[in-house]
Length: 148
Picture (cartoon, rainbow, N blue to C red):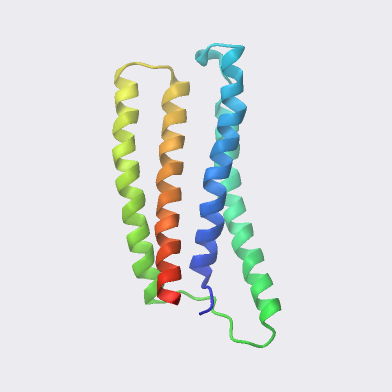
């Protein structure tokens, strides 16, 4: 079964979300040894990580679609969404929302404890990345299961 554009996008997003989050933490956590959390410059690395995920997902989806169209040479290539995509997306989004919702409870606790914004922002990014990654994993498993 041909990969739809939604599945291609899920692959790109599922790869980029954890990688960029790991890169963000590699950049900012190395500053902890030299400075206090209040002095860490975390905002720009976070915005860059989020931007890379957004732009990278778009570019990755487009390049994957182009490669698939070129390599299929005359075989019908599926680029549109179908009912299967909508059902799979619904299941993946539900997983993402559950994880993110529970995790944001932890972020609220961090704010109530009046921790530095570095910890609150970083926790929010980590929770979002975990939720997005697990949502993508659920979607990709459902795509593979429906293709079999």
